[in-house]
Amino acid sequence: EVQLVESGGDLVQPGGSLRLSCAPSGFTFRNYWMTWVRQALGKGLEWVANIKQDGSEKYYVDSVRGRFTISRDNAKNSLYLDMNSLRAEDTAVYYCARGYYHYDTWGQGTLVIVSS
Amino acid sequence: DIQLTQSPSSVSASVGDRVTITCRASQVISSWLAWYQQKPGKAPKLLIYSIFNLQSGVPSRFSGSGSGTDFTLTISSLQPEDFATYYCQQANSFLSFGGGTKVDIK
Image 1 (tube, one colour):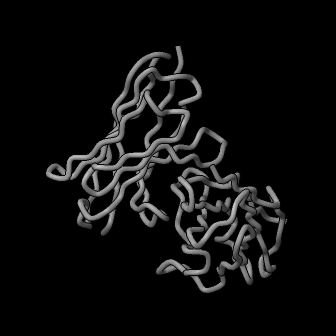
Image 2 (cartoon, rainbow over the protein chains, first blue to last red; image 1 turned 120 degrees about the vertical axis):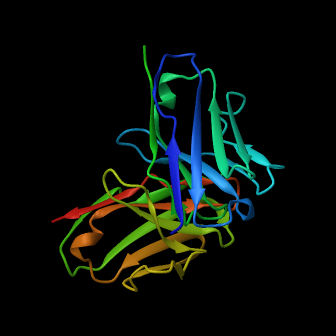
């Protein structure tokens, strides 16, 4: 079964840092672009970042560029999102998803709350 | 960046109704337009990709159409399990989602 499982969400203070992880299974991870999408509670979906199969290309939404870093370890079958200088407006459920042009597999999401 | 505007933002419908959701782009989109369904507390589910291609396992009552800047998701006969929020998404220029359309029970 093709599956993605996120972890690492937590309550963090403004200005703090957090690392999210995504563990894929059931498919050859190194063959796919991977993406992070977030959703503030009760709001719509927002694309956050994506990364090419070999990690050579990475793209970010303007609001997180310079604060968030997407990375992957194909040997360990893992996707990451390092989040620094967190703000209240970063509070959301973060999903990892498979694909570039569209996302055919999603994780269950991990909740990040930025609050003092 | 391409902005996607969905309409309506919400619609009330009955089982068996035909429901149409529109997604308008601020610039021309070639073919990278997808539609997702999301139920409360769940991850989005891919329904349609590349404007009109039905994702494997998705019922044929869902269909996509359109070109240029105007795109449509149609549910031909609404079923109880279709009450959800629907999002369009483009990948023609960076990536973005529409604001969503909530389909609820009339």
